[in-house]
Amino acid sequence: MRSARRALLAVVGFQLALAAALSLVDAYRRRGKRSRPFPVTDPRSVEVGESRVTTYTYGADVFDAMVEAIQSATRQILFETYIWKSDRTGERIKEALVAAADRGVEVYCIYDSFANLVSDPRFKRFPGNVHVLPYPVYPAGLRFLDLRRYGRDHRKILVVDSETAFVGGYNVGDEYASEWRDTHLRIVGPAVWDLQRAFADFWNLHRRRRFRSSERPLLLETAGSWETWLRVHRNVPRLWMFPIRGMYLEAINRASERIWLTTAYFLPDQDFVDALKDAAARGVDVRIIVPLKSNHVVADWASRGYYAQLLASGVRIFRFVGAMVHAKTCTIDGTWTTVGTANIDRLSLSGNYEINVEVVDGSLAEAMEEIFATDCSNSLELTLGEWQARDMHRKFTEAVLGPLRPLL
Image (cartoon, rainbow, N blue to C red; front, side, top):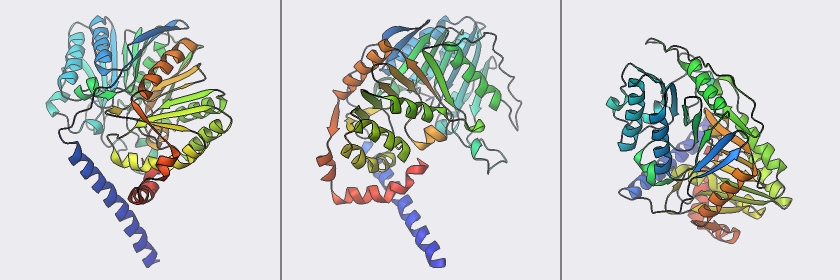
């Protein structure tokens, strides 16, 4: 037993050391490097039921639209984000929120403290008329064995006056404005209600503080309505709710023509991989866009362990070049679409607070397919022969890091 424990510790230690070494080398190589320009699709608006949905694929466009919405607010603003950098873009959003509070608008903000550990502490100070909930770095408190309390708040939501909402993959910061390829939606109409309710539920679930005065509860005055074409799915670890994975699997299993999926980090479980392989086996055109090089090199190496079986089954893999593709989108059969914050990995699908919009509408699916085609034009397709011919040291590194996939 003692020898077995030592061997296990040695293996785990080697895995962690290799992961750390790869991260350090990658950070050194990235010093001073900037993303190359990449093609984008102009914002496009479509009618979905009683709501109007606009797609954004360039950060500067969505941040301009968000600031415009904040400046037009008259009653209430709900803003939630994972990363909120203390740079020019972050300051711009903050100044707009503070100005709205100064003119009498109720402003509520949530950000994830762990994701913003390196931000200037002064940036995190807000005037008293802005209600702020920093989701704690360590949210479990004394319940350190309760796994339901360890999820990060990975959502990105803005709701203005119960009429306009934004949701998608964009964090807030200068690099996201021009250097990352992401996707966001603006929704105007009754579908906004579910995003508003998701924010309020998170606020009320986490508003109590142990060492400081708690925030007051957020009570909504508007009544929700059922939208036939648009639904909001949200993961809530505290309640052990993870519907986004189920939403994906159900849609993939129903696909008959094409599945076009874009994700920043591709670390699915085997059931998810099997669903994609089964779709390809029944003749569905399955395509996946991932970054050629993401901002998390260990995730890149770990994810490649799935490529062989996917490529062998007929799934096509495209790697976005020159910039980080951070979008979390999928469109199926020219009818079904999802856009949101959840990546295809364990942390997003069964760990973090996430939110995805599911839309059944041909017009939006057409817009998303246009975006996917544009992204493919900036991507390199990976072939099975190319993958099988990769160097031995790459195969070795992938095999060593493979067991870390369930943790990522």
